[in-house]
Length: 79
Length: 426
Image (cartoon, rainbow over all chains, first blue to last red; front, side, top):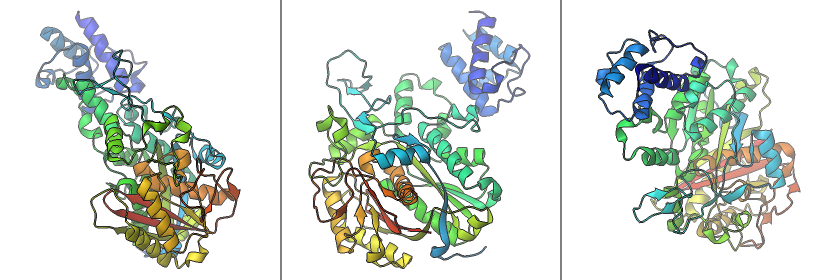
């Protein structure tokens, strides 16, 4: 699984949590916060992504990510 | 803040969702026709087999252990208004989705957008009413708790309904949940009346929340002897039979009712033509933790409500009883009705059509009374083939025409809760 696959999983969950993003053209430098995700939405999206990948890592590691691309990178490193 | 007398308190809007229909028009039409939706319950988390591991196993499992059939009436499909944000619905429980849908109906009817938000209060009647959702979550995540959704920490609380309703409808007065077992719905109405009378708010909304039973509660109610047995598993239509000699417990029915309560002055300002006056509201306890009913407790609640409504027993012409189909409960209620000299009044059992909504029952049955008042008709009592006693004014099939002037609604709950509400046609 490469970074692009992980990016797609994250954005699919983002669309599920925030339905208005359904047609949003996601880019690596999109920040979930700027797309209207509050802190609870963001933790939901992260948890759904980790569950999809069966990856159990401390959430504090993920909190460093500034945008979706960085989030995909961090998760990719831990796979 | 102005104080009001009980005689000035009215119901200005209602919303209802039940297995027999969504919205008051569909609900009323099905009710008056006695159209039921009883069947073996299919909602995930209510039908299960107990395996040797003591974990509920999905009914599709191929093992040959016996399936436990719980009968009830379930909402087949819910049409959620477009105005409710989809982003909030994703993590809203079934109880919450049904409450929001029903509230939307009542809110629009009562034109609550015209009321200052800080003058509106909300009471959600019911406690522990999301049990099936919790049970499903536990089953899904029991061996991978690290992936539990963060929103579980919010949604597991019943008060999540208060958060959702106040956010979506912009309510800024007060909001809280209130538990009174199967009388929760009526207790919420009783308290909403007090909030308006005291001037705390101008409008108070009372919601009887949908009690979302899981397999566990169904099994508990059955082993306690409160829920009807699976005797009618092959003929679910016959199972709900309040006041009939062949009854053996209540049959569950999903429902949610919302009533908007305010003073007649407040309603008139918005050109609202209220449904009825909430002339008397009473609550009293038996001092008894157990499920058994109390004749004295019920009589006291009825008398208090009549006294407050300034009505003599002879002036009551319709009774909407608690009438669950419980063996002792139904008998006790009939004795209390007779003792209070109300046995001349028309009597039917709404639960024979919609089932027992538990936390929702009190508000939904108030709405059932209002719908009958409006229609000038009384709904039939299903399966009342051989009443416990004939000497009451039973409304059997197919119902009857009658213009209700003064009605009394009764609710009782485990733990010795008794409530009574008098509704007066305006």
